[in-house]
Length: 173
Length: 207
Image (cartoon, rainbow over all chains, first blue to last red; front, side, top):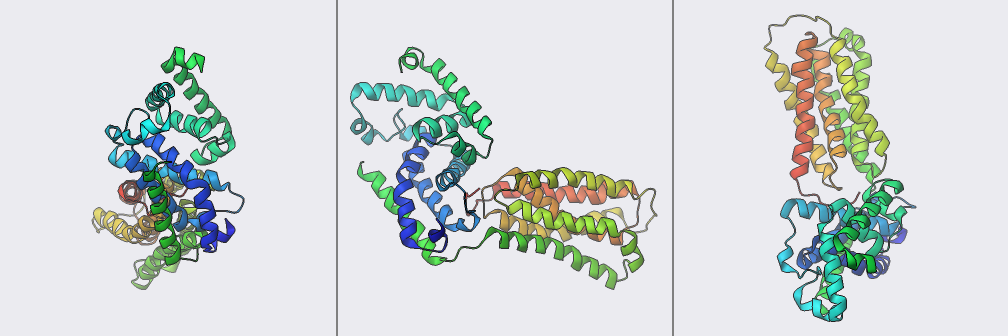
């Protein structure tokens, strides 16, 4: 990260290769709009470059990048509103949905994605970051700008609500 | 992975690399914050110098209100720094919490004051007019990071302090006048900073 902050393109490439795909998956899940997510991936990485002077040594790079993506997603939702009609219920474009999973798995994934979309945004952020992006609660706290305890509470409430929404599927999972 | 995301990843990489090549040297946030704090404080000091040069106030008035003048300069400088700091959330909360207390102290310190032939709205108008200069700096600076109401409000308080400094020197009216026409104008600047910055598209979404 320090090399990247000094303008090293190779260092940027390493960070991009490591984080671009997961960040795109995160944005797609949060926005349920693949096109908007792809636009915001670009916005996220441009912000990442522009604001590297705001990065402080010792800060978790992954959490910092997810924080940028989260801020960009929140801003996009506020300004334009996500357009869920562009996607299937799984949160991926129709032409990709069939490729990604077997039909039975796809049905379960669709149910989970639909339930996720019904969560309040703060709980959805915590659940997606924890369960699907596999961030630690310390990282989630850094991403969302809250305490570790508050991150755990948000995720816990999100999981509780998901279980209620999924019913028997959630119990079996 | 299918083709579209690969395209998206490549597009993001290309755009970010173009940005990196355009500005290979990172600008530290502390330099931006120092510039903003300096712009806030300098606007107030220039206004004070003009007030002294135009005999709107004398050095006796400066000494009489010295503690408040120093307090306003501190709010201006701290407001600029905490608005742009990536962390310092506690310090930001402290500035936001302390400024209304300082405003109350400004009002209460005036007592009955003196009557003036100048219309009261002149104070409001000059305060707001002077505040637009640091407000413009604040709005430009706030685009460099993700919007937070606390950042915007701290910047607004800092920007409004310049006009308040002029008011401390050039106006000798009482508490009620200060509350309505000076603190009111200060709050207008702070509210304008918060609301306008909310609507502006950030150049960066970094925390």
